[in-house]
Length: 332
Ligand code: KG4
Ligand code: ZN
Image (tube, rainbow, N blue to C red; front, side):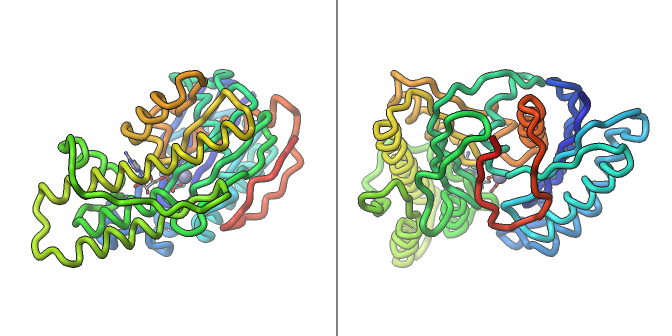
């Protein structure tokens, strides 16, 4: 079975071609350098670049030399509408050309199933039931997953996404966009600090809230005349520590509540080593699944795994409608 995956939900244009379980082509064009100067993603620039780069990737994949594609899958949400639309049009066009089935995939399911990519192959890595923590630039959600295609949202952020808070605090500190990796790097230079931030708890709930800590950092920095490197590093350290501890705290409550021994962490922020170590040390009696580092951020290979799982179960009933706020739904 040959299938093609397309990801264009935010600021990465990505294409992956699979021959059954094997990735035979995967290429991602990152738009970051175009958005950096604006310190965030500009939707109009993103969709224009997707339309330019998707055809470059299609050429690079040499689709014209391929005799058959059985399925074309694309990210139909959540994401930026204009960007999603480019992926959908590309998928419909290629699907029509090859007479392939076209299916729409939820981007967040892609982040979770990225854990199943080992080397350049899809393996049966994930074990169910599991609790999944998705931490990306646009989303922070906790899911209870009973199998592939059976997901229940049990917690989510009430305001900023976790990655978004990393990006906003990084910006206050004068770092580039996206800020998460800069904060992680700066934190490595610190062993201890007197600076202390807290993530306000959303009581009696598995929900998160990250806008409070962002405001704390803002007030803290407001009284400081010159932010030097030492302070930048210490603020990064204190912020990262507080945010990661809050992520782990709710994860722990969820794990206990649902009596689950499998945990998956995915999305852009799951690249953070401080978070990875905290989780590994805290949940020693659990199986923990992370995607390989190169599959933590947005990519088409993770969308390919979602296509493969649907193919395995023979489930193709699916809407092609794009939706910027697409909620996760069961598909089995
Ligand atoms: O999943 P992703 O690539 O895109 C979305 O779907 O949003 O996540 C991007 C987010 C950005 O906010 C970025 O700052 C954050 O992931 N990020 C990190 C790290 N690497 C990326 N945050 C903390 N530490 C990192 N090492
Ligand atoms: Zn993402």
